[in-house]
Image 1 (cartoon, rainbow, N blue to C red):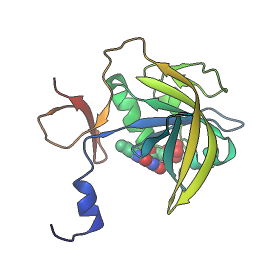
Image 2 (image 1 turned 90 degrees about the vertical axis):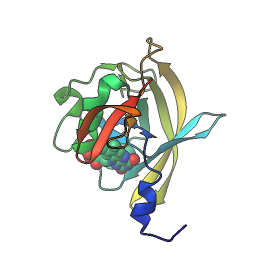
Image 3 (image 1 turned 30 degrees about the vertical axis):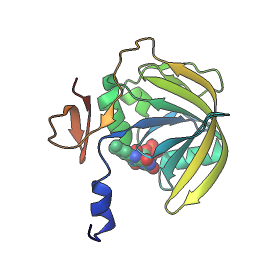
Length: 181
Ligand SMILES: Cc1cc2nc3c(=O)[nH]c(=O)nc-3n(C[C@H](O)[C@H](O)[C@H](O)COP(=O)(O)O)c2cc1C
């Protein structure tokens, strides 16, 4: 064991990792989607999720004002859309329209759920905590949804050039794919 730069140690724990999409909606305007690597389950009863969102993101602005969000788990069919939602800002582009993201109505609010996701969780933000340059928004799950196709694969962030994985897309230093059978 040797001491090293923080970023070098982080590289050793980083891949493969799960991805999520947080859908939020400003008062006047279309719903927006941000790609997240930093999210976790935080409670069983009631079910809760925490998401960590950078304070410069458009999603941060929306989540601070409208205290509801949908947490969607992307499927392999959403590789391109998940990449684009992580590389572009809703300040510049209507991501749902531009990237042809299929939505369904949810039950909790006007925020849509994502039709091609593996699962969707409609959440109400119950608390938030500043964490350095990010804010952790903790949401209580009010309604949960799963894809009708039970075999649909979950999209993962994967290591470069590793033949245990099928790579679907690579851009901006990120690679997404799934585990080989
Ligand atoms: C694989 C991947 C994971 C990411 N994880 C996070 C994250 O956990 N938190 C975050 O604030 N930004 C994360 N980002 C960056 C945002 O998705 C990105 O800045 C996005 O353009 C912000 O969109 P918005 O301005 O519409 O909110 C990630 C990007 C990628 C590609």
